[in-house]
Image 1 (cartoon, protein in one colour):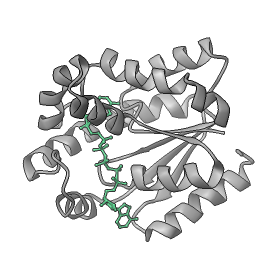
Image 2 (cartoon, rainbow, N blue to C red):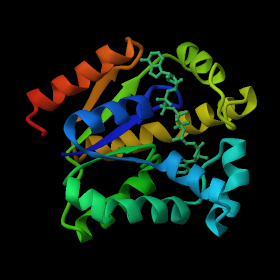
Image 3 (spheres, rainbow, N blue to C red):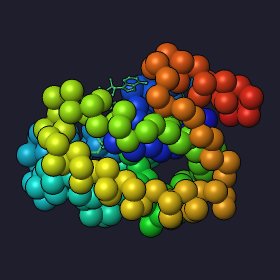
Image 4 (tube, helix red, strand yellow):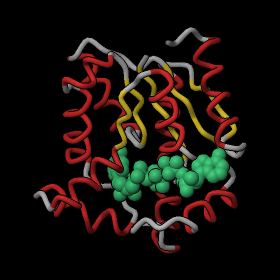
Length: 189
Ligand code: AP5
């Protein structure tokens, strides 16, 4: 099963991706985690993207595609036979680039989940956390970028796949059950 999970910063993409990956034996691929690992290790790519991430802007497409596609095609992902993408793609251009990588690999997205959460719920979730890019100014920028990119990205996916909208403002366990229910109903596993 290959899933893409979309949603605003703080909508719970990472939280749900971890739970779903465990439940359905999928590789959790988080673009944000992969980029933060590059920054923490001080790689050249990490040095190139650190400043952009700190400002809450999007890192260049080539950089994020590189880290994501390496994991998408590695041995562990092949062994598990399925993945859940969290934080990638974020723009219609990235979604198109992902389609290219997948088709070369004879794979495809099987379902797209959109976590919906009102903005007034997102901000306290993020600012109560302790991540370097959770300052009020950076959160504001991340939300602005999301608002700008989400409609073209949804248009791209809605022309190709079912986009399942899930209420991400419910308690964590309920959101997981709602997504797992979709997996059963649509026989995605
Ligand atoms: P990334 O790490 O992807 O950050 P994000 O999209 O801003 O999302 P978050 O990780 O903040 O939120 P989330 O939706 O995963 O929620 P979470 O589960 O953590 O990206 C960071 C940066 O990297 C970007 O700004 C950009 O610079 C760069 N980047 C990454 N991908 C890129 C790409 N594709 N292209 C270009 N640049 C890219 O939950 C948040 C909090 O809420 C947690 O404390 C959690 O416990 C809590 N919570 C979650 N669910 C619930 C719930 N149901 N009820 C109550 N609390 C909840």
